[in-house]
Amino acid sequence: MKKYKNQISIIFLFILLIVSICISLMLGRYEITMKQILQISLEKITGIKRINDPMIYKIIYEIRLPRIVAAVVVGGALSISGSVFQALFRNPMVSSDILGVTSGAGFGASLGILLGFCYWKVELLAFVFGIFAVMITYFLSYIVGKESHYILFLILSGMVISTLFKSFISCVKYLADPNDALQSITFWLMGSLTQIKQDELLWLIIPILLCSLPLLWTGWKLNAMAFGEEEAMALGIQTERLKVIIIICSTIITSVSVSMTGIIGWIGLIIPHLVRMAVGPDNQMLIPASMFMGAIYLLFIDNLSRTLLSVEIPISILTSIIGVPFFIFLLFRTRRV
Amino acid sequence: MILVVENLACGYKRRTVIENVSFQLSKGEVLCLFGPNGVGKTTFFKTLLGFLKSLNGTILINNQSLNQMNRETIAKNIAYVPQAHQMAFAFKVIDVVVLGRLVYMGKQRRPSREDYKKAREALNKLQIMHLEEKLYTELSGGERQMVLIARALTQEAPILIMDEPTSNLDYGNQIKVMEQIQRLRQQKFAVIMTTHSPEQVLLCGDQVIVFYGGKLIRTGAPKDIMTPQLIKDIYNVEVSKIKKGDGNFYESYIPALQTSLS
Image 1 (cartoon, rainbow over the protein chains, first blue to last red):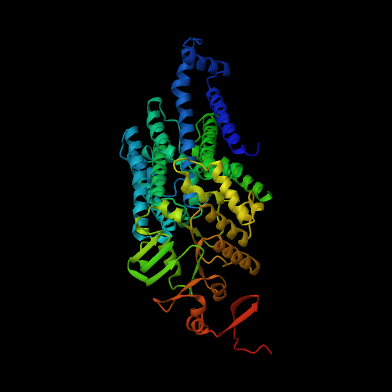
Image 2 (image 1 turned 90 degrees about the vertical axis):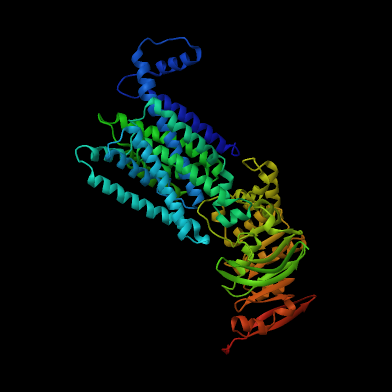
């Protein structure tokens, strides 16, 4: 039983995710029962129509389901990205935005809103600037860094570029009309899943799925990287290639997530920690377990965001307010152990 | 000869650290790299491991040039034992040791039962089987060093490169690690180790390369090269060489202190 503990944890998280999705479909102002959800699910399989109320279909397929899928995909993606970066940089305090992708995307979106672009152009600009920020970070570290301290220079460059783009965001906010663009920028920067539409989901799912798969395959190699780049090389890993794959895939999934949902902080940092306490540091288990846990966590936060008050609460506010005390509790628990 | 090095020059793009190093190493031999800090011992073994490109000369492993080998082939021929270190994540000892099998995993994503079996064999060989389920971060320095040696053994490479394997270890653990190096020699591994201790060179080394005074290098048998005069030239301290024989004859050094003990 002990031998299969981690596999059981993954199966448990998967079942918990399915249950969370079902509960999330029920939550909201328009009451939908579990029976109705099961009937609609069966309808998909058998093709026999069982519910006559068209409003239920509209609410599930056009409002709740896209949002739930987005929460699952983005929560999972940010957690995967945080897990692999923590292993790659051998630093548990690293999160998915360490190389400046979030600040870059934030600037791109702010600029798009300032210029009055339509929604998809804002998303595109956010994505492009997210990638652009990481490229600058990478090349800056390549130019100024020493071979022996490559990772340190990469992290420092990421901090510098992130700070630079945060200053750019402040400039854009300073220039924005306080009654119009500034409000939109501020709301966007706090993250929300409100704007996700059914027809946009594929743009979110496909790149994240394609870039998550290689990361899910890097588990054991990342275990070796946790001992340092030279030791990983001596163990037969082509570290340069592995680093490039990880940075490209993580950057794309974070950039896609942030461009569509705004800045959702804290998940990429806290979820890998939480999962590591449960399944240990083996990345072969940690990465998929983080993916499920991140999906469940963001789904939970989004449910609170849309049901707690009569107005929607921005997600980043809740991820921090709930995440911080929970994290402190875990730290105390770990200390006692 | 398992390793042949001819006229090797190594260093960085704009700086040559070591030049004209030549030696040959057979299975069951221990080569010590001896010298003070900052003379290029680390640069030298990083070049042997393929982390740095050689600036000149040739390195042949089983008659094949190191420059023509990919990472995996190098890892199958040379295993690296770093200094015992701490790390951020608490891996189990067995999961650390099985990393030595990474190079044999191919496209499969995880170690097989056979890989775990080999990892346990290595732990058994080093008599640290009791550490299998312990966390690497909770081990003593000596235990961590043994685990890193076990990981290198799991790699099944005929050449082991050890970076100051006794540094940061207490006296007892230093002796245990030295005993282990002797066993590795008996098991026909070719061992290259860096050390600051002349006693260890005399105790373990079949050959020694002494780095000192910039690019000045001496190679040969320890008993011929490791003279008190050489120690004085390198460290500017007086030592006396002593010989002791109780069946097994061995040599060591004692420091000649300037201040009288009385």
